[in-house]
Image (cartoon, rainbow, N blue to C red):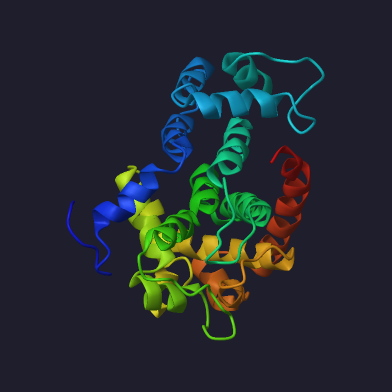
Length: 285
């Protein structure tokens, strides 16, 4: 749908900047659909990855890393997919996606590229771990956690393109990113993420959760996936990788646990699981 967003920033301008991002997230959406069916052949998964040659090359490289490698080098996507198998392939492609997607620091947000990559990877793994206990599809949760900062990346690019100078985010002046984004762009990063993922044909449940996962309104707590994404943020914060303008949104509360359908023991089990997986996978970035 063309025209302006509620912000006054043209929707087309937002989507144009989104198209300047690497295509890997769209591959991730297609891969997620394939992985919903346990009967999907590994060759179909390899074909989906080859849609984006840069991603395919990164997948091959990472499959030969100490994280995913098993001693014998591979030279093709098919070999890489067969090596890691059905259960691990989304994590491999996810690590390759975030490695390529975050291709620069976010100057207006004051976020270094390496920190953003690590924060998003941990958020994805924490979302996956929580979803397992919450009875939500863990692959859907992983993808949602991995791509949740897409709007920040696009707004940062829009900031560089603005004729009027944008003031860099200052935690002393603004309560968080949403207030700063609304002031300078008229739209929040979560709204932009939802807009883009909708355009890229991600499932409606992911789009809604991305829009609501900061849980800024009481109604947001009715979205279980949004609550899972928020609780994943609490795990990210506990590991010291929260983004400055979101840290206040990640406080652990009983209301959030109830919204996700989790108890404290399940949350702590997810903390341990996500921590182990992150220490294993961060070396691939």
